[in-house]
Amino acid sequence: MRADLEMVKALLDGSRRVVVLTGAGISAESGVPTFRGRDGLWRNHRPEDLARPDAFEAHPDLVWEFYNWRRRLVAGCEPNPAHRALAELERVLPNFLLITQNVDGLHVRAGSRKLVQMHGSLWQVKCTVCTHAREDFGELPALPECPVCGHLLRPGVVWFGEPLVPGVLRIAIDRVSKADVFLAVGTSGLVQPAASFHQLAKDHGAVTVEVNLEPTPVSGFMDFALHGPAGEILPELIAGIADTASARSTGGGGR
Ligand code: OAD
Image (cartoon, rainbow, N blue to C red; front, side, top):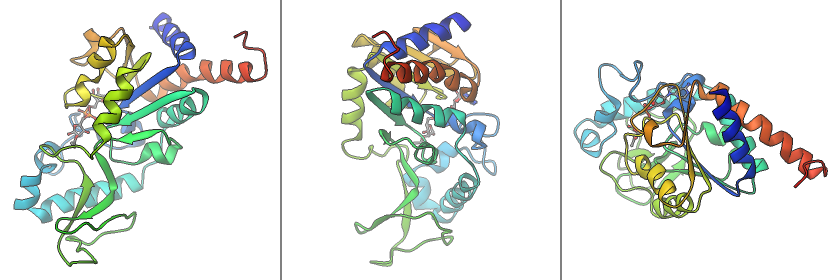
Protein backbone atom coordinates (compact mmCIF):
# COMPACT_ATOMS: atom_id res chain seq x y z
CA MET A 1 0.00 0.00 0.00
CA ARG A 2 2.85 2.42 0.83
CA ALA A 3 4.37 1.93 -2.66
CA ASP A 4 0.97 2.46 -4.30
CA LEU A 5 0.40 5.59 -2.24
CA GLU A 6 3.74 7.00 -3.36
CA MET A 7 2.93 6.21 -7.01
CA VAL A 8 -0.48 7.91 -6.79
CA LYS A 9 1.16 10.91 -5.14
CA ALA A 10 3.63 11.17 -8.05
CA LEU A 11 0.81 10.75 -10.59
CA LEU A 12 -1.26 13.51 -9.01
CA ASP A 13 1.71 15.79 -8.85
CA GLY A 14 2.45 15.36 -12.55
CA SER A 15 -1.10 15.49 -13.82
CA ARG A 16 -2.84 18.39 -15.49
CA ARG A 17 -6.47 17.39 -15.09
CA VAL A 18 -7.68 15.75 -11.92
CA VAL A 19 -11.28 14.81 -11.16
CA VAL A 20 -12.29 13.56 -7.72
CA LEU A 21 -15.63 11.86 -7.03
CA THR A 22 -16.70 11.63 -3.40
CA GLY A 23 -19.44 9.73 -1.59
CA ALA A 24 -20.79 9.39 1.92
CA GLY A 25 -17.61 7.68 3.19
CA ILE A 26 -15.65 10.95 3.07
CA SER A 27 -17.99 12.42 5.69
CA ALA A 28 -18.06 9.31 7.91
CA GLU A 29 -15.13 10.57 10.02
CA SER A 30 -17.06 13.82 10.57
CA GLY A 31 -19.83 11.76 12.17
CA VAL A 32 -22.28 11.73 9.22
CA PRO A 33 -23.68 8.19 8.79
CA THR A 34 -23.13 6.57 5.38
CA PHE A 35 -26.10 5.20 3.42
CA ARG A 36 -25.22 1.54 3.29
CA GLY A 37 -23.02 1.13 6.35
CA ARG A 38 -23.94 -0.39 9.70
CA ASP A 39 -25.27 2.99 10.92
CA GLY A 40 -27.16 3.56 7.67
CA LEU A 41 -30.65 2.91 9.03
CA TRP A 42 -32.87 5.70 10.33
CA ARG A 43 -35.70 4.55 12.61
CA ASN A 44 -35.75 1.20 10.79
CA HIS A 45 -36.07 2.87 7.39
CA ARG A 46 -33.48 2.53 4.67
CA PRO A 47 -32.53 6.01 3.40
CA GLU A 48 -33.11 4.76 -0.17
CA ASP A 49 -36.76 4.14 0.74
CA LEU A 50 -37.21 7.71 2.01
CA ALA A 51 -35.17 9.55 -0.63
CA ARG A 52 -37.83 9.10 -3.29
CA PRO A 53 -40.62 11.26 -4.74
CA ASP A 54 -43.27 8.58 -4.10
CA ALA A 55 -42.28 8.36 -0.40
CA PHE A 56 -42.59 12.17 -0.14
CA GLU A 57 -45.98 12.12 -1.81
CA ALA A 58 -47.27 9.37 0.50
CA HIS A 59 -45.62 10.54 3.76
CA PRO A 60 -44.27 14.11 3.50
CA ASP A 61 -44.18 14.36 7.31
CA LEU A 62 -41.96 11.27 7.63
CA VAL A 63 -39.63 12.34 4.80
CA TRP A 64 -39.33 15.89 6.22
CA GLU A 65 -38.65 14.44 9.68
CA PHE A 66 -35.80 12.41 8.14
CA TYR A 67 -34.36 15.48 6.36
CA ASN A 68 -34.76 17.76 9.39
CA TRP A 69 -32.96 15.12 11.46
CA ARG A 70 -30.12 15.02 8.88
CA ARG A 71 -29.91 18.83 8.75
CA ARG A 72 -29.57 19.01 12.55
CA LEU A 73 -27.05 16.17 12.62
CA VAL A 74 -24.84 17.67 9.90
CA ALA A 75 -25.07 21.17 11.43
CA GLY A 76 -23.28 19.68 14.45
CA CYS A 77 -20.49 18.11 12.32
CA GLU A 78 -17.25 19.64 11.09
CA PRO A 79 -15.29 18.98 7.88
CA ASN A 80 -12.54 16.41 8.52
CA PRO A 81 -8.94 16.16 7.21
CA ALA A 82 -10.16 14.41 4.02
CA HIS A 83 -12.46 17.33 3.09
CA ARG A 84 -9.67 19.78 3.88
CA ALA A 85 -7.12 17.81 1.83
CA LEU A 86 -9.36 18.08 -1.26
CA ALA A 87 -9.80 21.82 -0.75
CA GLU A 88 -5.99 22.05 -0.60
CA LEU A 89 -5.60 19.91 -3.74
CA GLU A 90 -7.91 22.32 -5.60
CA ARG A 91 -5.63 25.15 -4.53
CA VAL A 92 -2.38 23.56 -5.76
CA LEU A 93 -3.52 21.85 -8.98
CA PRO A 94 -4.25 23.98 -12.05
CA ASN A 95 -7.17 21.96 -13.43
CA PHE A 96 -9.24 20.28 -10.76
CA LEU A 97 -12.89 19.36 -10.31
CA LEU A 98 -14.58 17.81 -7.32
CA ILE A 99 -17.84 15.97 -8.01
CA THR A 100 -19.70 14.96 -4.87
CA GLN A 101 -22.75 12.79 -4.36
CA ASN A 102 -23.01 14.19 -0.85
CA VAL A 103 -25.64 16.72 0.14
CA ASP A 104 -24.10 17.63 3.51
CA GLY A 105 -22.22 20.76 2.37
CA LEU A 106 -19.02 19.76 4.22
CA HIS A 107 -16.84 20.21 1.11
CA VAL A 108 -18.02 23.82 0.82
CA ARG A 109 -17.36 24.39 4.52
CA ALA A 110 -13.84 22.96 4.06
CA GLY A 111 -13.16 25.53 1.33
CA SER A 112 -13.82 23.62 -1.92
CA ARG A 113 -15.10 25.88 -4.68
CA LYS A 114 -14.48 23.94 -7.92
CA LEU A 115 -17.30 21.66 -6.91
CA VAL A 116 -20.34 19.99 -8.47
CA GLN A 117 -22.96 18.78 -5.95
CA MET A 118 -24.59 16.10 -8.11
CA HIS A 119 -27.39 15.29 -5.69
CA GLY A 120 -28.14 18.86 -4.58
CA SER A 121 -27.85 20.10 -1.00
CA LEU A 122 -29.51 19.55 2.36
CA TRP A 123 -29.32 23.32 2.75
CA GLN A 124 -31.48 24.07 -0.30
CA VAL A 125 -35.28 24.03 -0.11
CA LYS A 126 -37.66 24.44 -3.03
CA CYS A 127 -41.39 24.70 -3.60
CA THR A 128 -43.25 21.62 -4.84
CA VAL A 129 -45.48 23.89 -6.98
CA CYS A 130 -43.92 27.26 -7.90
CA THR A 131 -40.33 28.23 -8.74
CA HIS A 132 -39.39 29.43 -5.23
CA ALA A 133 -36.04 28.00 -4.11
CA ARG A 134 -33.62 29.21 -1.47
CA GLU A 135 -30.63 28.31 0.66
CA ASP A 136 -31.73 27.90 4.29
CA PHE A 137 -29.48 26.91 7.18
CA GLY A 138 -32.11 27.48 9.88
CA GLU A 139 -34.42 25.20 11.81
CA LEU A 140 -37.42 24.31 9.60
CA PRO A 141 -40.97 23.46 10.69
CA ALA A 142 -42.19 19.86 10.41
CA LEU A 143 -43.95 20.67 7.11
CA PRO A 144 -42.40 23.92 5.78
CA GLU A 145 -44.55 26.06 3.48
CA CYS A 146 -43.59 28.19 0.49
CA PRO A 147 -43.57 31.92 1.41
CA VAL A 148 -44.71 32.76 -2.14
CA CYS A 149 -47.61 30.39 -2.86
CA GLY A 150 -48.21 28.60 0.46
CA HIS A 151 -47.68 25.09 -0.93
CA LEU A 152 -45.37 22.52 0.61
CA LEU A 153 -41.60 22.97 0.34
CA ARG A 154 -39.32 20.01 -0.30
CA PRO A 155 -35.60 19.42 0.25
CA GLY A 156 -33.43 20.63 -2.65
CA VAL A 157 -31.90 17.22 -3.17
CA VAL A 158 -32.11 14.78 -6.06
CA TRP A 159 -34.15 11.72 -5.14
CA PHE A 160 -34.02 8.26 -6.67
CA GLY A 161 -35.82 8.26 -10.00
CA GLU A 162 -35.38 12.02 -10.48
CA PRO A 163 -33.12 13.60 -13.11
CA LEU A 164 -29.96 15.38 -11.94
CA VAL A 165 -29.88 19.18 -11.81
CA PRO A 166 -29.77 20.35 -15.48
CA GLY A 167 -26.24 20.73 -16.80
CA VAL A 168 -24.62 18.84 -13.94
CA LEU A 169 -24.28 15.53 -15.75
CA ARG A 170 -22.97 17.25 -18.91
CA ILE A 171 -20.23 19.02 -16.93
CA ALA A 172 -19.35 15.85 -15.00
CA ILE A 173 -19.12 13.67 -18.14
CA ASP A 174 -17.09 16.30 -19.99
CA ARG A 175 -14.55 16.69 -17.19
CA VAL A 176 -14.33 12.99 -16.30
CA SER A 177 -13.65 12.10 -19.93
CA LYS A 178 -10.79 14.65 -20.07
CA ALA A 179 -9.15 13.68 -16.76
CA ASP A 180 -5.56 12.39 -16.46
CA VAL A 181 -6.29 11.06 -12.98
CA PHE A 182 -9.69 10.06 -11.62
CA LEU A 183 -9.99 9.51 -7.88
CA ALA A 184 -13.10 7.93 -6.26
CA VAL A 185 -13.22 8.52 -2.50
CA GLY A 186 -15.62 6.92 0.01
CA THR A 187 -18.25 5.74 -2.42
CA SER A 188 -19.72 2.25 -2.68
CA GLY A 189 -19.83 2.55 -6.48
CA LEU A 190 -23.43 1.32 -6.59
CA VAL A 191 -25.45 4.39 -7.56
CA GLN A 192 -25.59 5.59 -11.17
CA PRO A 193 -24.53 7.68 -12.95
CA ALA A 194 -21.52 8.26 -10.66
CA ALA A 195 -20.84 4.52 -10.55
CA SER A 196 -19.88 4.62 -14.27
CA PHE A 197 -17.47 7.53 -14.04
CA HIS A 198 -14.38 5.40 -13.36
CA GLN A 199 -15.06 3.42 -16.56
CA LEU A 200 -15.62 6.60 -18.56
CA ALA A 201 -12.36 8.03 -17.20
CA LYS A 202 -10.46 4.83 -17.99
CA ASP A 203 -11.91 4.59 -21.51
CA HIS A 204 -10.47 8.06 -22.14
CA GLY A 205 -7.02 7.18 -20.83
CA ALA A 206 -7.13 8.33 -17.19
CA VAL A 207 -5.41 6.53 -14.36
CA THR A 208 -8.12 5.50 -11.88
CA VAL A 209 -7.68 5.41 -8.11
CA GLU A 210 -10.02 4.32 -5.33
CA VAL A 211 -9.73 5.46 -1.71
CA ASN A 212 -12.10 3.48 0.50
CA LEU A 213 -12.19 1.91 3.94
CA GLU A 214 -12.66 -1.49 2.29
CA PRO A 215 -12.81 -3.16 -1.13
CA THR A 216 -15.89 -2.25 -3.19
CA PRO A 217 -17.50 -3.75 -6.31
CA VAL A 218 -15.33 -1.41 -8.43
CA SER A 219 -11.97 -1.95 -6.68
CA GLY A 220 -10.92 -4.59 -9.23
CA PHE A 221 -11.47 -2.15 -12.12
CA MET A 222 -9.28 0.57 -10.63
CA ASP A 223 -5.59 1.00 -11.43
CA PHE A 224 -4.92 1.66 -7.74
CA ALA A 225 -7.09 0.81 -4.72
CA LEU A 226 -5.94 2.44 -1.47
CA HIS A 227 -7.80 0.98 1.48
CA GLY A 228 -8.07 2.82 4.79
CA PRO A 229 -9.80 5.89 6.26
CA ALA A 230 -10.01 8.78 3.79
CA GLY A 231 -9.13 11.16 6.64
CA GLU A 232 -5.70 9.50 6.87
CA ILE A 233 -5.00 8.61 3.22
CA LEU A 234 -5.94 11.92 1.54
CA PRO A 235 -3.79 14.18 3.75
CA GLU A 236 -0.83 11.85 3.04
CA LEU A 237 -1.45 12.02 -0.71
CA ILE A 238 -1.83 15.78 -0.67
CA ALA A 239 1.13 16.54 1.60
CA GLY A 240 3.67 15.64 -1.09
CA ILE A 241 1.88 17.62 -3.76
CA ALA A 242 1.44 20.74 -1.67
CA ASP A 243 5.18 20.57 -0.83
CA THR A 244 6.33 20.23 -4.45
CA ALA A 245 3.86 22.88 -5.64
CA SER A 246 5.25 25.38 -3.16
CA ALA A 247 8.82 24.34 -4.06
CA ARG A 248 7.97 24.94 -7.75
CA SER A 249 6.54 28.36 -7.00
CA THR A 250 9.79 29.32 -5.21
CA GLY A 251 11.87 27.91 -8.06
CA GLY A 252 13.09 24.75 -6.31
CA GLY A 253 10.80 22.17 -7.91
CA GLY A 254 12.98 21.37 -10.94
CA ARG A 255 10.15 21.53 -13.52
P1 OAD B 1 -22.59 4.49 0.57
O1 OAD B 1 -23.12 4.54 1.96
O2 OAD B 1 -23.25 3.58 -0.42
O3 OAD B 1 -21.05 4.07 0.59
C1 OAD B 1 -20.13 4.67 1.47
C2 OAD B 1 -18.76 4.10 1.15
O4 OAD B 1 -17.84 4.79 1.97
C3 OAD B 1 -18.60 2.61 1.43
O5 OAD B 1 -17.99 1.99 0.31
C4 OAD B 1 -17.68 2.56 2.66
O6 OAD B 1 -16.80 1.45 2.65
C5 OAD B 1 -16.90 3.85 2.49
N1 OAD B 1 -16.36 4.43 3.75
C6 OAD B 1 -16.94 4.47 4.97
N2 OAD B 1 -16.17 5.12 5.85
C7 OAD B 1 -15.07 5.53 5.17
C8 OAD B 1 -13.89 6.24 5.53
N3 OAD B 1 -13.67 6.70 6.76
N4 OAD B 1 -12.97 6.45 4.56
C9 OAD B 1 -13.14 5.99 3.29
N5 OAD B 1 -14.24 5.31 2.91
C10 OAD B 1 -15.19 5.07 3.83
O7 OAD B 1 -22.56 6.00 0.03
P2 OAD B 1 -22.44 6.57 -1.46
O8 OAD B 1 -21.58 5.72 -2.32
O9 OAD B 1 -22.13 8.00 -1.34
O10 OAD B 1 -28.04 9.07 -3.21
O11 OAD B 1 -23.94 6.43 -1.96
C11 OAD B 1 -24.26 6.98 -3.20
C12 OAD B 1 -25.66 7.55 -3.17
O12 OAD B 1 -26.59 6.59 -2.69
C13 OAD B 1 -25.88 8.73 -2.22
O13 OAD B 1 -25.52 9.97 -2.76
C14 OAD B 1 -27.36 8.68 -1.99
C15 OAD B 1 -27.44 7.20 -1.70
O14 OAD B 1 -28.63 6.61 -1.65
C16 OAD B 1 -29.23 9.73 -3.13
O15 OAD B 1 -29.73 10.04 -2.07
C17 OAD B 1 -29.83 10.05 -4.45
